[in-house]
Image (cartoon, rainbow, N blue to C red; front, side, top):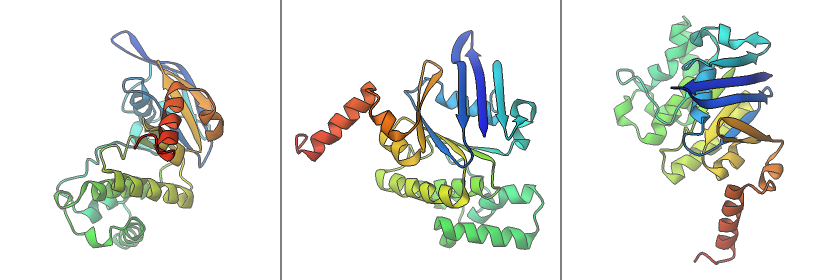
Length: 243
């Protein structure tokens, strides 16, 4: 269980996160929706240790996470930009976390090859990042995040820069792998369709606070203006009114 209580964060005196509380169950993916600037990315960065909270507590498996250095939290932050190491090939980019943890060469090779097969990267292992497409780069980034088996993955609009086909492929890949690996994740997006596809539960962030819905049905029936507009649009497409 992941528990956030009364998290606050200010920039230049302005509240970005205001008394925010949230619980995420083990192996659950929670999607957070919200407009740009509402605090979604700030929340992830506070949890990852990239930003310091001004108040509140963060517990994971009954540990006080804010007391743990960022590199020892077992949390991976995955952004829209893959940020691969340009001087390392695909194999070594994926293997980086294992190298840091002093795994043997045979252990690294076995684990990287197995994950590369799962990610469809077997033919790309010796390539350098500049030789990859955007979708391939994000697959490598995903592999580098997964291979250390983190306690929690924080995904900050990870597929936002991809074309629609590649984005759909990555959504399906994450959906499959999260079930297989029993991943616990917090997934930030501004896309309602993506939130419905990716999340076990959905939350809406507004003015630094969260409203969490118990399931997708409750979210769809919430009367939220954006949901109403989205459903109206797709009803129009289905009924031929948009053609």
